[in-house]
Length: 471
Image (cartoon, rainbow, N blue to C red):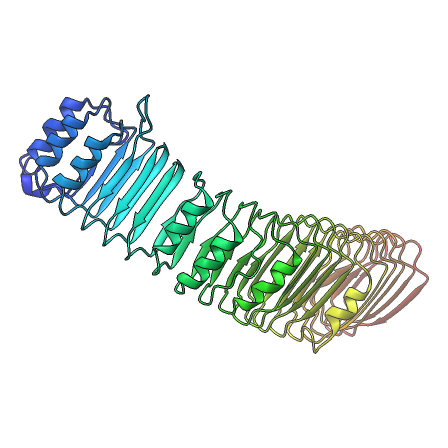
């Protein structure tokens, strides 16, 4: 108790999620003038006079958070004038009084981070020479003027700001490295083209859900991460122009209305195009690509991937997918499931030793359009064709193959596994229409053919076989 009352021990004080009155909060603040971080969110009825008196007691304050406080000029003036060392100011969901629109004016020489969330204002003025991070989210304003030459991180997401206001904000921020304009509905290509010229250091941009954005002629030389999710104006030609952003490492085109995407970026590592319901053709020539996400693209019929780094590929619920072409020497796992239009050519594409020489696991589950499969490969260890109800013939010459799953392959009549490396047990009793089996498995111990009542040809080359169950 004696230590907790010591003035010098208190560096941070938060009233968030606390049941305290304004008087109790002010009393505690006066007892601890050395605090550097203060959160007054949740203090009911906080007045500008009480805040001014509290801040006058805190000469060393560096961080201030206000929530649901009535905003007006005197309050902001107190924050700026009473706290010369203030480095971070956050005002969330302020109460705007009825009457004329309130201006938001912040002038501070040492402020480094400013956050304003959820407000309807008249004008916004920010003049902070050392400001590095500015977030104005979910804000309506009639005018915005920002003077912050040191700004590196700008977040204006979901704010109702005109294209001209956005353009002026970007023009005054030449050192930007991170930009978030998500749901800025008035953002135009012209503003972005200007930003590309005036913000050469920009590395990350979230431009998702900007309906007027087409990305035509927009080239950011240093950009490494770009999110264009839900940008209806982005078309196939726009995707081609993105190939000029040669530093890109992360690209998201989710929910865009493109019909084809051809991406050739030397440094791209992550690519996503989920929910592109008009997309028909996808081609990726990206040697450093390690992650691909393609889901809910209902019209996609062709996928081509060239990568020296991709280790795993998953394609699911692509109902029109017919063709898959891969040139991926590091690829270890492929999962293609619920793609009923997938053609038999996929087996040849995945057996090509020049295309996927390291492939260890292949799953084509629930691809009901497959009828004849022929696989060859020295590295393949696991093969799953569960639910391939149209499959009639399977041939595999994969000496390292250890596991084969053929459940619910109801039409499978011909199986040739020669040679394969299956060791313990192989159960083909789940294939009721099996007529012909050719098996070369030197290490196989047990073979189950229960339920294969239609089998007429059986050729076994299994010197280690101990158990053969045909009952």
